[in-house]
Length: 323
Ligand SMILES: Nc1nc2c(c(=O)[nH]1)N[C@H]1C(S)=C(S)[C@@H](COP(=O)(O)O)O[C@H]1N2
Ligand SMILES: [Mo]
Image 1 (cartoon, protein in one colour):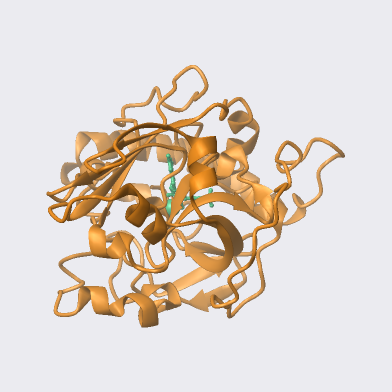
Image 2: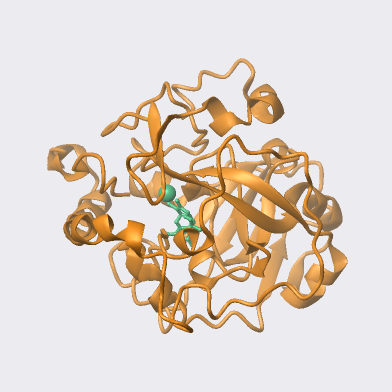
């Protein structure tokens, strides 16, 4: 993943890199070159012509979803158009500000989520599934491994509730999430990374109170660029764990492989907990900046500020080794 704004990451000796990461890095170079030009204007990209903005095609939630006030922020909310126009969704493009127009082509209705390894296994129509499960709104910090961050109101199903409903066997120790692979609607999938994008969580992480299967943001149905119609949100982990446009959820016994760990295992671990003390091999994680302003720098918080809820999950684990 290119850290395009702080320090060029692509000067890694190629001998140290896997072929896949070299390829990604070359693409990153192009994106970074473009991003460096585009980025200074994002501060101004908060106004779009009427009907032409990144939120114009998303729909306000028809039913009232109640905010769970337990989750408080220590910083202002990111502007909605900023969160909807600065995105990582590599199946479309690796140029963050070019994702949203490309993503509008994505068909998200109807949508099927396949479940495996649990009592409710099989294909489920998302609309029906949403009727069976509770949703709420929560304000969370969100931190990308590239050091940018935001603070947004997500709407979603607490993953814990979903797991209880799905009824996995006691032997299920992990969850695996697979996302949409649809080349006809996704112009970025033709590069040499192995899509579909897939992620995983330990079952005790998944059933912690924090993770959401998110279906909306800012009181709206999820914009396509943010991972419509359903995505994971794991607020104490780097953003790449929060995979978008999920089509399959499996309960498994062994730790599943994950997309970024396979692409560059020395850089992206399975756990990916936000940790100011564990540097990425190519940049420090001590600080972060709030989009859209690189001037708005903050100290990175351990577990992204969610230690109270999640520190216990990692008791006795060496977080430098299990990064
Ligand atoms: N399917 C899929 N999910 C994905 C990604 C992706 O490229 N493809 N990028 C991840 C990364 S690196 C981040 S930081 C977040 C960005 O979410 P946002 O665009 O809603 O802010 O999505 C994550 N989920
Ligand atoms: Mo990210």
